Length: 428
Image (cartoon, rainbow, N blue to C red; front, side, top):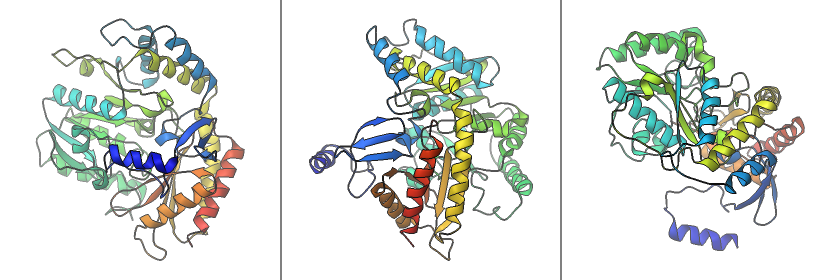
C-alpha cells in the first residue's frame, strides 16, 4: 500500500516536493509524543511535523475545541466579526512584549513573513531588506528572495533588494574564532559598514535561532546590538519566530527575548506551533506599522474560526501546564545527554541549541567538511530504532534537527537519546 501511494505521489505531485527516507513513511495517527505508520510501526516523534505539533498529538483539549467549533461554524472570512479570532489576538498581543500591538492572522509562516515584508517596505518606503546569511523564511516569491540558504532558494529573482549580514552562525565563518563579545562587535562593525554602502533599508529580518539552517544561533545580545544601530536610522527589526516562539527554547517565551536588551522587535512573525497542526500563522506589529497600508486587505482563511479555536485551546494548555518550563528542564537534560554521546562519536562536530530545539552537526571525521550522507544514514538508523528526526544545514553544513512536542517526558527524552546514540554509533 505504501509503495502504491509513493507511485501515485510521484505521478501527480512536483518532483521537488522532498520526502524523507529511502522508503518514505506514511504517518496515519498519533498520540502524545508518538506516531504510527501505515504498517503499524510506532515512533517517538522528535520532529513534530517540522516543529508544528507543539504540545502533543491528538491532545484531547484541542480535539474537543475543534469538534465543538466545527459543529457551530468552520469559516466565515475576516469580512465578519469573529469572536475566536479576537480572543486569540488579544492573548497573543498581551504576550508579545510589543507596545500597542496589532495582530493579523495568516495561514502559514511563509505568508506571515510575506506580510511582514509588505508592512515594513510600505512603512519605510524602501524595498531594501537586510537578512542573515544561512537564513530561511519560507517559500513564497518574496520569502525566497530574502532566504540566505542556497539549498532553499530556487531563484535569484526577487521583488526586493536583499543584503546579507554576518552573525546567524556562531561556529563557522570569518568570526568563528572570536570570543562572544568580539564576535558581536565584529558583526556590528560589518553591519555599520554595510549600511554605509546602501540606501536606508526597510528592515532587518532574522530568526533568533535559524531553523532550516541547522538550529544555529549567534551569542545572546547580538540582535540587541544590531537594534541600537538600526533604531538610529529608523530601520525596523522583524523577528521571525515561526520556529522559536511559544517557549520552545525554554529560557524565553520568544526567541527575541535573548536579544531584548534594546527593546522588543518592531514586528514579530509566528506560525507552526501555535496551531499544533492546524494552519495558523500571523504577524504582530506596532499599530502605526500594522495600520500603514492604504488599500483594502482581508484574509479569506487567516483567522478562520476552526483554526482559532484550536489555537486558543493549544495556547491555554501550553500556559496552564508550563510547557516552557518543561522545555527548559527536559531539554536541558536531553542536550547534556546528547553532548555526552557526541563527545564519543568522531562524526559529531557540535551539539547545540536550547530547550527542545537541538541541533547535531555532522562532519567527516578528522575534517571540518559537511557529511550529508552521514546525516541521512543517521536519520534512517533512527527510524529503524523507532525515532523520527529532522535534517537541516546551510553552506557546507549538515545537521540533525531535534524538536519534539514540548510535553516530552524525561523517560521519553532518555528513550530518544538512547535510540539516537545507537544511530550515531552505527555510522562510525
